[in-house]
Image (cartoon, rainbow, N blue to C red; front, side, top):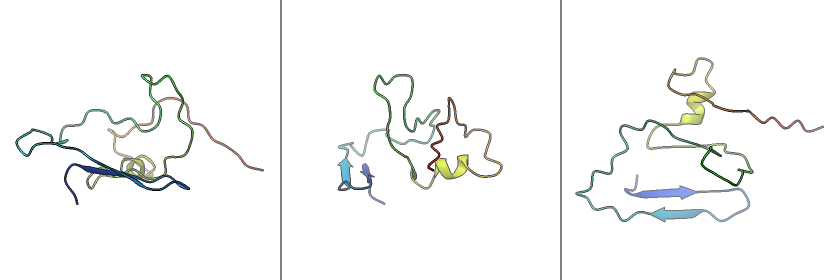
Length: 87
């Protein structure tokens, strides 16, 4: 796994890679995360349009944990769920 790197892939778009210039001496470990927003949250004025089907953060897969039969108590979905039924 590459350090200070993230990749975003959206269907029908070329993958985009982001590299962050973080010094080795910086305390940039995400080992005490309290909240992770996926999609739209209350701080955004524009809505989120699309489908988030996979999220990986190091070796943690929050969406996979959320949709388990008995998800961990610290993994929650807040707000309304939008379900689109295609005929």
